[in-house]
Length: 125
Image (cartoon, rainbow, N blue to C red):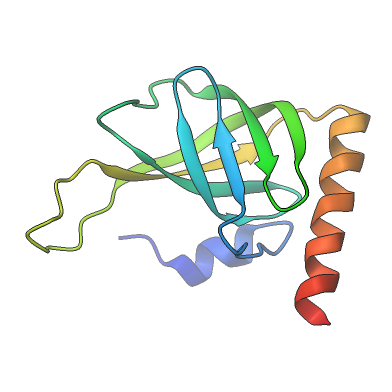
């Protein structure tokens, strides 16, 4: 099992845990962002409706509280694991995917930076 603390130390940017207001999607996936930084993110999604089989994905982000979209982010899949909690309701269909942002355009980077700065400022206020 990987040590989460060591994984966090490897990241170039620290991740924020959003307040469930960021969606990730493409034509096959609809998920909810668990944490995000300027370098990548992790999200949960339903395995029954989608499965991540590709090393690289084009994903869109929707910041629901701002009604702002960051489209067509090229992402490299780092991990895609099943989440199990052992409860009777746990059907094994929920997965957690971690991705690294690959190549961002200047416009994507600027928009993502602005949105993350706004979130940092509202969290620290």
